[in-house]
Figure 1 (tube, one colour):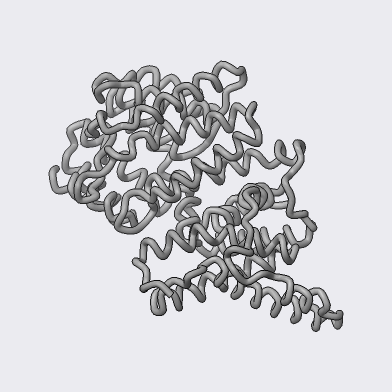
Figure 2: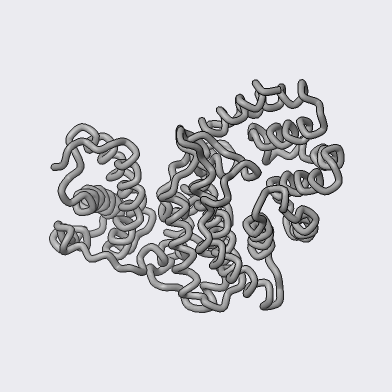
Length: 412
């Protein structure tokens, strides 16, 4: 046993191991529902024991042994309840290996899990929620934050998704071309949400979770290898790279948030920007343009400006006008209002926020108050801006965002 882990490192390790263990369990037992429940119990056991006893020398093997035992117990119970022999479960007790060296990881496991969770037998919302937990290792509260819905809603979606997978008899294998095409939209949306959670973490003391954003980029690269001609995959990868290129400049020495227009652009990753621009340009030149390509183009305009004041806001606004016709996302609408304010003045931007006041997807979110405060500040209404900055601060669980909003309120 190693010494007790640091909380952050411990959480990162469990998130990394979870899909590996789930892949091993599903390949062995051919039952996603039972395997996922068993892996979750194994993770809970690790969360209880490892901080006290230290991380085992072979943590993945430890998790597999616990998950295997839980799975066999479930299969025995199901078999007994159906009065069926337990030969399969008994044989599996002996057959499952017990050491890390023997537990070979199939490099396709995570990709298979990704497409499996996005099977058309599931609703889009359930598929995304399940994949965020099973493949990306997000917790239920983090997923709820990403969806802007209550935690109970996510619990129900995940439960329904697992039941649907079990009922459909989906095989654990690489999907064929037709299956890939059918599930790709959900897969990309999942990875987009994972990246967003990593780039701006929904709660806690850190602004960013680099492990999550890196994992999202890694998975999109894997999907691109599988589907090299897909414009949407290329567009999403470009978007992630162009945004992630700013990572080093987004926080100060004490982890404080630094907004885009105040960042030291010399810290931006030029290699990622070049790769992202090349991908975005190639995707845009291939014909039909989707949401990810447009968002990547917007990110490219920001990244190619040497200074904040050099930003081509009219071009950004034109791109948002097109994007608004493709999606009803409230976040896109907020960004469109900001772009409008930068071109036509803050009052024009504020006028666009009125329809969002009754949007249920923004209820409880800090985003609308934060954008309204920003535009009121630009319009010179400092008192109203300060009140809304404080309101926004009270609605976010991200400590760096909260501190930034409170700082803005105090400066009014």
